[in-house]
Structures are given as C-alpha cells and as structure tokens.
Image (cartoon, rainbow, N blue to C red; front, side, top):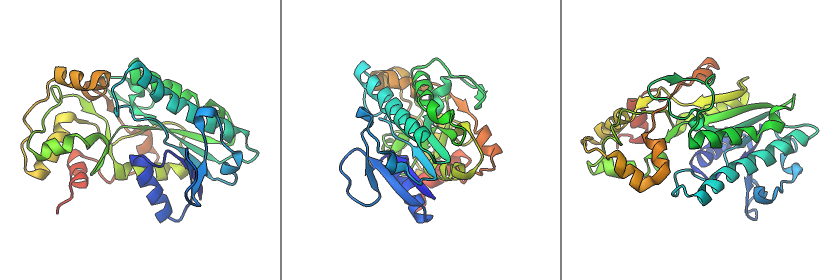
Length: 297
C-alpha cells in the first residue's frame, strides 16, 4: 500500500513507520520542515498548506499529529496549542482527502479514550457518548474536524481512540519506570482507578489491522483495562522491587496541575469494536504488558 503518515516523529508514529517499511509499504511522511529524504513531504497545518499531490495515489492516510497533552502544564495557552494542533491538522487532511478525485480509501484518524471522560468502575465501549472532562472536549472537536472525510462516500474513517501506551522507553511510563527501578514506585492516588492501556506493539499492530478491517467510527485501542496499582505491581515484580510507596493525590495535582485528572481519573474503556473486528492482542494482561516493557535480560 501507499500510506501517508502525519505525526511520524512521536512514540507511536516512529514505531508505526518502522513497521510499515518492514512490511513493504510505500511510506510518505508529512513533515513541517524542509524535506530531508525521499519519504518526506512538507506541509504547514498552521497556515492550511498541504499540496494535494502529496496524497495522489495513496491507499491510506494515518494522522497521529498533535501536541502532547501531558508534556507541559496545561495553562490556557497550552490548552490552545493542544486543541489547535489536533483540529488544524485533522481538518486540513480531511478537506484535502475529500477534495481529491480519487481519494484514499481509508483515513485512520488519531484520537483518545479520553473521549469518555471519567466513568469510575463502569465499563464503556464505543457506543458510549462523549464525557464532560477537559480531554473529552478536545476529542469531540478533534474528531469533529474530520467531518469532510467522514461525509465522503468513498472514504472509510476510523477514529483511533488510544489509551495509555506502555512502551520500554518514553510514553506514559517514561517518568514512572525510573522510580519503580529504585523501589519508589507505588499507587498514584489510591491506585484503584482503572487505566485503559495498550502496549506500543499492540497499538501498532491494531493500526495496521485497521488499514484493512472494514471498521468505521470510534475504535478503542486498548487491552483489558486494569487498575493502576495492578499495572505498577506487575512492573515492579519484573524488577523484583516493592510497589508500596503511594504518591498522594494532592502531590500529583501540585506537580501536574489539571493533567493530574487524567492520571487520577478512572476510565474502563473496553476494546469492543477492535475485538469484534478479529484483532487479537499480543499483550492482553498487565503481566504480559510488563514482560513486553521489561523483557528478561
């Protein structure tokens, strides 16, 4: 396939690009700087510039672009960056795709399980409505920006509602693993909140699966949700370390501000659509995820 990828420099995008190349697909990477190789095509979402020729002949477009929600404190200015980095890229790609005489047959649009807000211990699936949290509002606008492609009769659009991505380095565990290695890891808050998670390997496999699976609309890219403390304990056991020192909720809020809501809030998002489409997780449990993140040396 010919695949156009936006957001190829992040954790997921980097791993996905490597896998696409390994499987023999032709990759076109959209970048915001002068090109440095034959894969790259320049675009500028901030000013709405995207040459439609970059998408000519493409079979699929995958959009993972967007500023990190937890990278910096969520001031009002940062919130605008988070929102606009998603809606501008998504809107520009969707309009360009919809305007082509022969558009790509599929757009896989990045999204997040934060769409549902915080639901405690109640399982949620793709049939559940948007929540009322900060991130739920971002996701509503983010997915809404894809409307031109969604409305095109020849384009299948799936929203990749990704959970917390677990990887050997970077991502959600980038700050937590060093503490666990020192025996300082433990519950965040009371630790009983559900985390909707997926390993980086399964995230990439799921995206590749959705290039062909006849699925449209929201897709929860998660494994079986687990309580945060159970995930930390599984990681600590791999390192033969304790996982008993709690990080109080008030300390999380002091350190992370509003983003602490995303860490302390409980969301039990089930991968109902992904499972129904025939996808099988390679790391379905917390223990399997810990073995992936911390392979035996």
